[in-house]
Length: 155
Image (tube, rainbow, N blue to C red):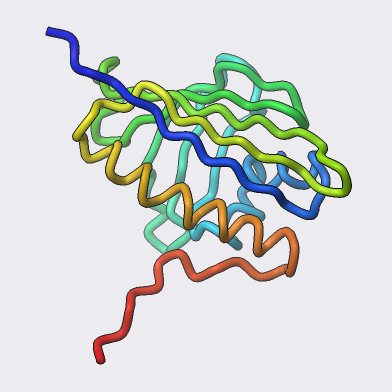
């Protein structure tokens, strides 16, 4: 039986350049500054593997996938799965980053497809992408990302 799938789309506008936005997604030393993780690949070319690695001392690989399409600085498409489910082809979803100049800004559209409805991945994606992309925007515009792992303090 085929599981029902959905997708999540997030659009934001960033005062930056397409090149800097693309680098913010693909350069480990930049992703760590706004995400607390590093997106790592040998070359970000189609067929290459990529990993989402904790920037902490543990350097734990959390997500894995393959580069499906790469057209710097306007488009990147990657497959995406929890590292613990990497051997299950059904566990993979797909993320597309479309980066377009828009007046003096960049329009970034992130589309996360092939999410199983009600899955932990769908929940994580719908909660995670807005804070991560808000942090990227803050970092690119001010030089300071948000603390994406901040927890509300008890009153």
